[in-house]
Amino acid sequence: MEVVKSILDAATEDLTCIDERLLDSLQHRMRDKKWPVRKYTMMSLVKLYKNNLSNERLQWIPCKLLHSFHQPFQEDKICITRCLNSCIIPAGAEINEKIDRLLHIYYTNDESANRSLIDILNTQKTIREHLLSIVSATDEENEISDEERKKIVAVKSAAIAGCLPDPLKVQASLRELPSDEVLMKKLADSIDVTKDHQSITKAKTE
Image 1: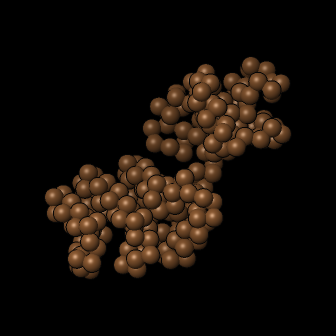
Image 2: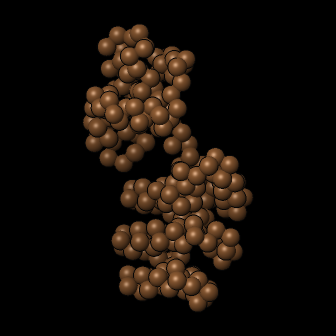
Image 3: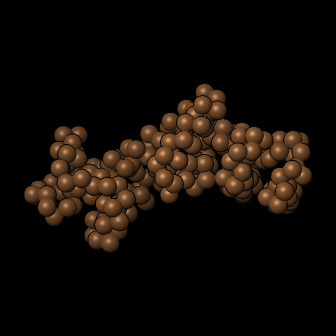
């Protein structure tokens, strides 16, 4: 771990002092047997990439990061998704910047990395759609019964839990979600809830 930290600290200060051999060694550490080493390496490399987007020597980072997504470790999947959303395609970036970054990554990745990228994006889309159904179902303007509302929340919570690690814990938390008005409002704002109730109609038919 100390060697990895030293290399990454030096790269952050001055990337030109890091030769290709050292960069190659960091690629291997992304698949280290020890989780703390893998996590530190992945998170540090994507930060380095974010701060040096135009540097050709670092264009391999998104591809190698996504290669690790299908390892049989849930913590890796979570870390890689966070790295993608924070540094590779930042969630807070303008839409045009997101599109540019996504296209750049897609056309520079290999097929294996793009499969992982598509899996992540599809999962995020599915979760957003289910959350939209929950938020819409709990909207006071929707004239549906409490029983039907609870059914929609239960079904969609189970669907979301199936997309994430520790599904039982996730499902339990989501069932309490409708009672948190502040969080529900934040969710509504973040996923741009529409008022045409199309998501409720879809939720009823699924």
